[in-house]
Length: 244
Image (tube, rainbow, N blue to C red; front, side, top):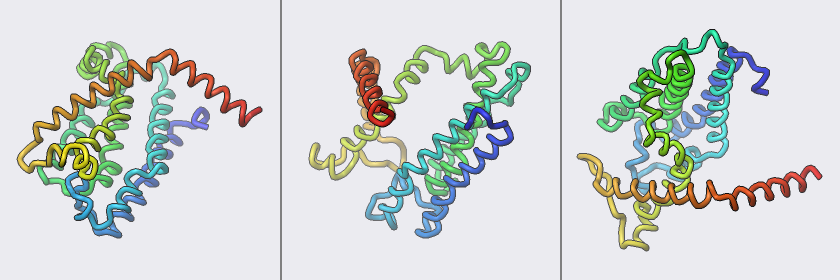
């Protein structure tokens, strides 16, 4: 259905999906009076209802809405006309906005809970950033402009190539190191605690392990010819099962 939508309809779709994402998070914040809770630094015992937080934060339905927002944004830039190529505002400003939000929250200046900041500010800024970056990079001389040139550096291209494995492994590795129940069984306790005066040095070890695991997953599984062939066979089998 995206193929037949006009730009104005796609923009309305983005707004509609954003509002749908926001409503349950507003309900969570209002019901628990959790407007200013920083969930990332709060233990489960101190949270007013950790089960509700997890249900909203990790809702497959809300995650699907965010994926659809990305699809709508992709379709918007696909509808750009050739004569409009490169005509866009700078992607620097939404990038500065996102970094500013992170810094202001770290300093305690912005005290709005994680999910509201994500829905109201971070996701819209991220979408605008990516759309502007795409338009700038595909425009005249785009490859030589600051951000496209920076993001095309070999190291960043490599990290982009393993971004999905990083997404897959960062949670389980974090559970092993920092989840109290798991870490206590494995190591006798959590290997690091949040510090009010900065980042604990072990956070660097955590990310080194995440990157190593992501590289192994990419090389041994994602890029494996055996896995690709098995995936094709499974796909054919599933289609044959339901289509006949």
